Amino acid sequence: MSHPVCVVGSINLDMNAYVKRFLRPGETMLGRRFTTGYGGKGANQAVMTARLGGPVTMIGRVGDDIFGQDMRANLAAEGIDTRSIGVTPATASGVAVITVDDQGQNTIIVIPGANHAVTPADITAARAAVEEAAVLVMQMELPLETNLAALRLAQGKALTLFNSAPISSALPDELYPLCDIFCPNETEIELLTGIAVQSGADAEAACRALLARGARNILLTMGERGSLLVNRSEVFHAPAPKVTPVDTVGAGDAFVGSLAHFLAAGVALQDAMGRANQIAAVSVQRAGAQSSYPRRAELPADLF
Image 1 (tube, rainbow, N blue to C red):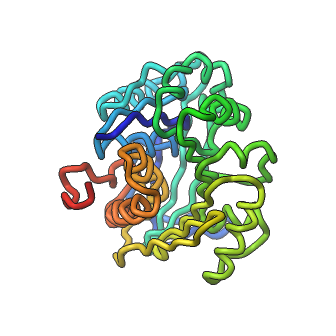
Image 2: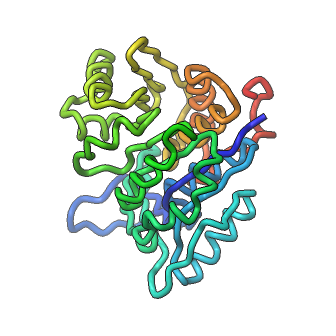
């Protein structure tokens, strides 16, 4: 049986442009097609968790606009408890402008809007959801002080899973010891440590550099190369299935959301990593973020 997962995070509308290749500066290009979809790293992770079963609560904010109304309704339709999603007047909802090339790679511009109006007071107001969760999930599309408030409140109560995406600067020393699992990708870990991940040895060295800052586990996601766990007693690599990607948008969120579900269900971290890799591999074979996420009934029964 799965226990509650609480996601503190962003809620965006994704605007997806599909192109042959990425633009050069000053260039105009005809795109192949355009779609919109529900996104935001927090909302993506919450939806992925909910689609695997078990209770999920989300803490966040949308704007007082049609996008916000639609996004809140979408989360509720996925079975997510939306009572802690506030509406911020006179503020636009968050949006992400996404370009996907013919190789399935992507670039993303995030305009936070109401996501940056989520404050520590919102965490306090949703205290019960944080304290009753088995797993608390966070990312970097909300103000840092809000994430810190959630991490502090969860200590000794929920397992804390911090996904350091997106990131552009150093994180405060206080944050790392508050994280049971600190989860960057290869780009993010290079920004945080200065170590470019070009080999397995590089990956382990970068993880150990973050481990020294106080996190209990460093879980590095490496796309088609799977995921790597480093803590004070072990190094564990979970390979990813070999697939042909169609669209990698939201794959990292599929991994994190799946991982949260399995951890809340009592699955050991190493086993949960392998299962999450399998679900992320399913997502990259479909277009979009949330639209690519499988439901439990679509997945092999032996995953559960």
